[in-house]
Amino acid sequence: MGERARLPVDLSLAQGASSRRWMPALAAGLSIGEYARSLVRRLAFLSAILVAAIWALGGQGYFWPAWAWLGLGDLVLLDFAAGWAWRHPPGAVRRVACVWAVVGVAAVILVFTWLLTWLLAGVHTFWPAWALFGLASAGSAYSLIALHDRVLVAYGRRALRARIDTLTRTRRQAVDAQAAELRRIERDLHDGAQARLVALTLQLGRAELRVQDQPEIRGLILDAQREAHHAIAELRDLARGIVPPLLADRGLVAAVQSLAARYGLGTSIEVDTHRGLAPAVESAAYFVIAEALTNTAKHAGAGRSWVVLRDEHRTLAVLVGDDGCGGADPLGSGLAGLRARVEALDGSLRVESPDTGGTVLDVRLPCG
Amino acid sequence: MIAEDLALLREGLVALLRENQIEVVAQVQDAPALLRAIAGHEPDLAIVDVRLPPTFSDEGLQAAIEARRRQPALGVLVLSQYVETAYASELIGEDTAGIGYLLKERVGDVRAFIDALHSVAAGGTVLDRQVVAELLAPRDGAGQALSGLTARERDVLALMAEGRSNTAIAESLVVTPGAVEKHITNIFAKLDLPACSDDHRRVLAVLAYLRVSR
Image 1 (cartoon, chains in turn orange, cyan):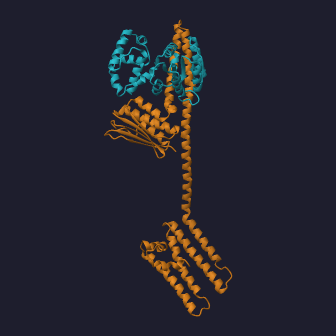
Image 2: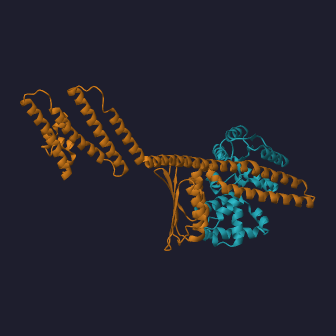
Image 3: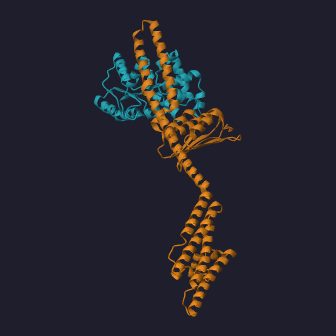
């Protein structure tokens, strides 16, 4: 009661820092309810002093004001418990808080009453034990019933979040592994089948020199060599489709420069990225730009085109635009394929291509 | 000398060269060995694969450029599985003398390949026709000037860019050398290039034109 006893004194300093600390509602402007509560506290404190004074003046003896104090203390306790319970968000949680506030107040009253019976009347058995046990059981049972769905939902949400985390991580691993595997395949094609075919054409060339005088055999050898050349060209196109050699050897910027030069659109390239990119991100960015420039060259009739590669927070922004005729179909098959590729990396793809002209492809690729 | 990491191809090349009275003084498998061997043997010509160990990206090309820097008289023929105009431009740099850039499968046409080797060793220039085709691909800027050429003049321009001599161009197109000369004069006039008789300076002029207008 010592600290609480200072309350009425501090309340008189309505604008002081300590009043704000003890009665925040007062500083902010009191509601009727708040004012009533502060009044109850003041009256309780004054009454407590008054009965003690009457007892002191009335010849003392049996300390009967303790019972009055208990009653007054109960009032203040109830007030604080209600305030505490009301701070909870409305709904099941507030209802549970109210139940526990009542249980708590009842328990404190019981214990203090027992304390007084022990001190003043010499009762030695702890008679409120069963009542306290009953109150705690009732409070717990009510809490369980009121909050069980909430507990289950929270558990479900946690499990779901863990699952999403796992899926995100494993998908990224799968995409990265796939990109690395594709590069390995490209390298294997280069060092394996392609090299063997080159060696084959070389040997056929040597054989052809030896049979200059036998036109029939020479013709057969030249046919075989032609076939080998076709196979080499097909393998080359296949490897280029997997990962363009310049991308694998020199990285994204060099590959994009070469791409732009090949289309001859006078594309301006602005690069502001310094991070090392994962193969999957690099390939996705490359194929996005390649597809966009192909479309520009084929359909747009553009006078100007540009590519921007930029670090933005934890993503790589890829912007490809032109000032052509616009009207690109965002659901077209080429763009759908790109979208799938970008979304597999948790990226986003946006196409702005109004009929009034100009097309901008805006792709964001997270880089971990 | 030859730098190629695949034994099958390397040995095939060595056999091919020896059959054609070309001495192979060294065979190496990676870029550092190439630079060492060039310093030790001082060959007329180095045949280099673009992709070499250990990273299998473009260290063959880088080594070829470095070797040329150390020994400007060295002829370098770079073989590549792919045509990359960017690689060709880097290799050529400012000086086309003694430079070749060919697709690997061109080794199958033995006579043309041996001719190319001799040409590069003698300070000539050989560019793969796919590189030239890409340089000549229609596009803005140069495209307009190039589209002013007749089909035959474009053929002649392509062959010039590949590094062929007038005689070779005439043979290839089955026309007389006089006709080729007339075409060349027309091309130079239409593209506003300074006329020059020297083969390799001519290639330089043509390539410079094609690269600048890109």
